[in-house]
Length: 551
Image 1 (tube, rainbow, N blue to C red):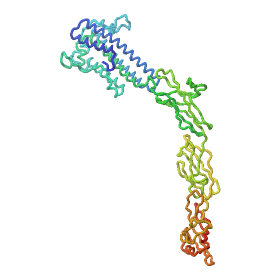
Image 2 (cartoon, rainbow, N blue to C red):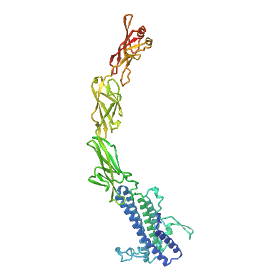
Image 3 (tube, helix red, strand yellow):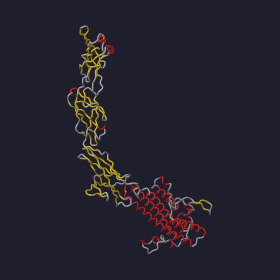
């Protein structure tokens, strides 16, 4: 019996065969023999019905492949191979039946199969009630077993058993290995226990040894029935692997995913158009145009070629030529899963903004670039990744990366303007991001000399003179924190009517200068002058001195 679910009719036929076989062992009467004939004829009709049911499944494969050829073709090809293999097995058994009837009835083949396909001659193989030697058990035994009591290599029974095993093995190869254990194809060939002989007997002996011809014919027809059942089990298992009844989505919604909604002139806008929960094996149609939201149809001009669809995803590419918001949309058309000639339409719309490239270059500390300093500069372009920027500086150099750079300008550029130009790597190569940004170049301003926090002309208490350490250049209102080295300076003071000047190297007062300062009395003036410093860039300049009046 086949391993799938049997219909009530099939279960009844199998039960009738078992009952009649048991009755044969008790009494082989004409009525019992005719019952086998009727059973056989019923099985022939059942085989016809099974063939028709299987053809419905094959027709469903045809429809499914029209709807989604990439997904279904492989399964359909396997189903066709199952059909061919099953028909080969069915035809082999049909030949066994025809040869056996010919042997038992001792008639010409045309009397068994019909002459030239006409119905004027009775086809015994189609209606075994017309068999005359239904009870012959010698010729069937000889036909299948030869002169032996047991089947041996070379006789029909042995060959038949091998073909059944091979048929079942072949059919199971068409389904995944993990599912084969759930499929029992019937057509059992194991040895069976004989209660009358109280021993195990071979499948061949049980079915073909000294059994009446009509019982053997009915058995063979039942085996054809099992072949059809096995065929149905396999093709149904294949068909279940195809999603053909519905989309299987909770919600169908059109989606547009763009690489960016901000597009530079000359660059490319790129978007993916697809159905949510889409299939990579079924391509929808994507049409662009104005959509009637009630009818889900394109109104007016219809663009059916701009969106290229592959593996279920449509790609829409356009290079805008003017600034502003660009709106676009249309419908996505999907085939009906049950009828591929019917389409369902789903509207969508999207937009993006096209803008000219805009360079943003800003000094991090001031609005000019200073000679001799590491001027920090930030560079960015809206819509462009920082790592794709390629800035350059006329009249100087830029170092750094990812939007943060150090600008250095030469002494020769003082009083002039320099320009930061920016290019960027895009999908279409390196492109200029537009007009550059200009900066004025200045020298670092001179610092102011200070002593003990005092500058220019200032008063100092006589007691504070002992705390004097040296000269400190101060950068007033300058955004950079600089340490300006002092090269040298002089200290001058009138002592006893005599003007005395003492110089030193470096920023600190020398011992001689401090000794002179300690001689200062009330109302004496101490002059710290000729202060020489080295500015960034290397220039040595004189800066303003400090005049201290002792209180």
